[in-house]
Image 1 (spheres, rainbow, N blue to C red):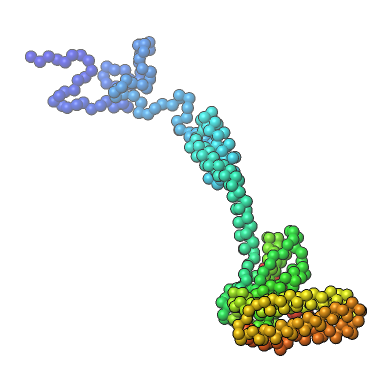
Image 2 (image 1 turned 90 degrees about the vertical axis):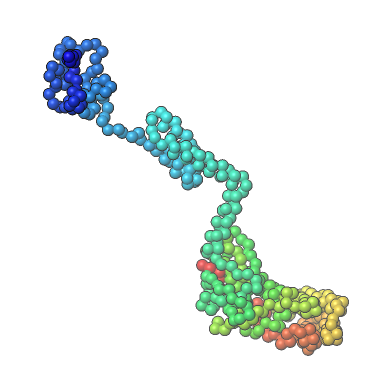
Length: 426
C-alpha cells in the first residue's frame, strides 16, 4: 500500500521529472501569499527584509533596488595635479628640487583626500631625486662651466669659421676682400685663392674696437709672421700680397678675436699655385742660417724713420747705430758657422761686403752727431750698397735659394698691405 507524501510544499513527481521553476512574475502557488507580501503583523522577528532571501532562495527581485544613499554609477577618484606636475618635472629634469617637493606634497594629499596618482607622485619624486643628485655632481665638478663653454664654442663655430697656418683654400666669389662667410679647403699643390701663413689673437673687452683697429693690428703683426713662414722672402712672387681674415662686430660678441694672415694674388681673377711655405720645415740648416742673418738685418733696415734726415737727423742717428750693431752681430754669426764647400767662398765674400757696410754706418752716425746732413747722406748711400748686392745673390745661389731680387713699393714696410682685409663672418 502506498503512503501519501507528507503535507508541505509540492514534491516533484519522479515519473514526470523535475518541476519547472516558478515564474517570479506569475501568480503565486496555491496556498501562498502573493510575492513579497506578508499578512500584517504576521512577519516573525528576524525575518529577512523585503527583497533579501536566504542563500539559494529562487525568489527575489531580478535587480538590485536603489535607495541606499549612493549613485548607481561608480565615480573614479580624481588624479592629483601635483603628482602629474612632479612626474613631468622629474622626466624633464629641469627643476629637480621643485619636482621632489611637489611629489612629497602630492603623496600627503593623496592619502588625506583619497585621490589617485600615487604611482606618478612616487615616480616623479624618484626621478627628481636623481636629477637633483646629477645637478649637484655637475656643479661640484665644474661640469656646468665646461658645458657652458662648450655651448659658447658651438655658437661661435656656428657663426664663424676658422683657417689654420699652412692651409690653402678657395674663397666664395674668388675674392679675398670684403666679407667672407666661409672657405673651401683645397690642396696647396694645386691652384687656390689663398694660403694661411700665420694667425694671432686680438685683445680687448666686449666692445668691438672697429674695422680700423683690426686692419691696423693685421698690418702690424702679419708682416713679421710672413718672414717666419717664408724665410726666403725673395721666393715670393711679385703678384703676391698679404691679406687677412679678422673678426667683425657680430663675431666679436661671440668671443671671436682671431686674425688670420693670408697670401693672395693681387689680381682678383688670378690664383696661387703651389705652396709658398719656405721655413724650417722645408729648408736645410745652411739655408736657415744664412736667411736668419739676412732677415735679421732686413728687420732693422725696415725701421728707418719716415721723415727725411734733414727733418729728423737725431732719429736717423739712432737708427744708423742700430744698423751698425746688427751688422756687427750677424758678421760674427756667419763667420762662426761652417758652410758647404760650394758656399764657403761666396758666404765669405758676402761677409766682407757686410764689414765694409758696417764701417759706412759708423761714419753715418758720426756725421749725424756733427749735424752734417750731406756727409750723412754720403755714408748712408754707401752703407746700403751691400743690401741685395751681387755678393748676396752669389751666396744665395750657392745654397740653393732664390736669386731674383724682390721689388719694393715706395710704401715702405706696409708694402701693399692695405689691399688686404677680407673680413671673417658677419
